[in-house]
Image (cartoon, rainbow, N blue to C red; front, side, top):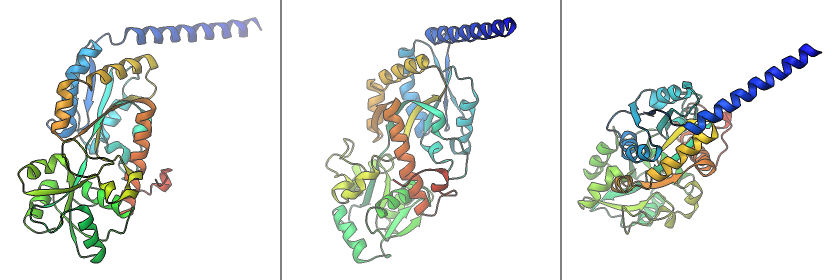
Length: 336
């Protein structure tokens, strides 16, 4: 009995000591440089966003943040790398939306449910564009023609799972939308083909279409958002023409900062505070605005809700277009 009591007391003492040690580590965090792992290569959209916010985050955190580009597997390699690191907050992920689709695309079982969203920094916005000389003067005009001529209007695409096909699926889940998707090797070639008359319209990221719109070569019919955006003044939200799309929005590619879920709460709090401050910096706000992105600057429960809704909407859009490799239903992802 005495031996058992001694053993129990020893175990409690050890546990208390470990807890105290953990609290001390969290209180002193960060004691050294921190590693920010970018899931895509240098010069890409995720890398550009990461490097724009990084200087202000370093200043707020009080220690250097070393940026490491670790691409591959559509973001799966970097996500697994951060997930395998110690849960001490010294390794975090500069990630985009891709891991939320890894399970449904059969890439990996690891998605952002295994991570804590330190900050969803911002998201991109899609836009529906037509050539400047198009007969379509509004989104209502385009939708009326598609309704009157089902299966005849050609839409520029980048293949199943790409931004144009996903936007098309979201519209189709809201109203009848029978178009002919014509695939191209990227948004750039697709927009060029549209200007050449090969397709009638194309959903694309604002960053891909903005210069053409400014040059007067294209006309934006609607932004795929619940409200107009500052980067395209005067362009209506798609919900003006399709009110029932509101339940799928906001939607678009996004960029964020993620750590393992079991990182100590005090460490999470310090990271949250640092990136909340960094996302308000003038340099970051300017870059995001110039690229047509919407600054979100959300964390915790609000960010979790955004991630959950985004996964539901996109996974089922992929399922409906035949691009999903694994049914969202089998993964426990409910239809939005």
